[in-house]
Image (tube, rainbow, N blue to C red; front, top):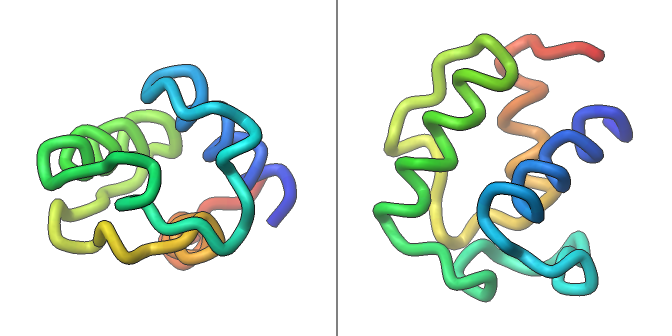
Length: 79
């Protein structure tokens, strides 16, 4: 999980401008100012980065960082 978490963290900080100190495991995406459009962009980014399909409705503003990493892992991503 750590390698995938690191990649998810890099995406959130690099592409979405989230500050590293905001990325505690319990923080939800809405606390990071994600809205429905940002979730769509995040789903597309995950699809490209990990070569998986993430449907727009699989991510929620109520997902934590852990939930988000687990979603990627559930798609069969290994690093």
